[in-house]
Length: 257
Image (cartoon, rainbow, N blue to C red; front, top):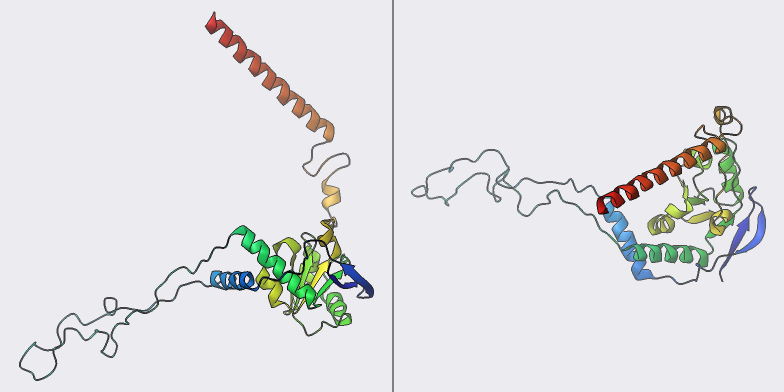
């Protein structure tokens, strides 16, 4: 079992946090290399291009006749050995897409988390509480933890827009859900902060924004339909299905007769 530092939402040290069983401490360097290389390859657009002798303009005729001039024979001024000529074996547009098996990606991600945990650069924190986006509050929180100048990756439990917006103006801080972080993003960060509810598998409930409560009346779901109305619709659908089934059965019996 790996143990990492545990902090409160106010950046106070709570002791140590015992990580779940998935943190087995095994770091597969070969798989990490594959995952990082695949990630970087997939960021390339592959739009580079050079002109071959067939794409360079000009050079439609021989610069001089074949014999009698005393000079070497030439066929075009756009040949590769001429200045302004075409490029031989230059880069052309292509895709650098590199696919990895799903289990390889999972192993690489697990290895990256284990590596950060063994280096004591993985911190477990209590769920961050933001009623609205506050960049200054998040910056002060990181400063109290001693991570003011480090590249920080904050992994939240589920989608937390208020935390994401709080870190948007901090170029050294990245926020994303725990399940979406790749091995490259974990290794790129100098410190990884994980909400404890993400490790427990419990997502933090998103606070209701202003106007949402008024938009959904009491006794009704977000779609504007009460439970009783939904139940009636379901019962009607079941009754209609049973009626169609009876008609089909009766039609088959009449054909057999």
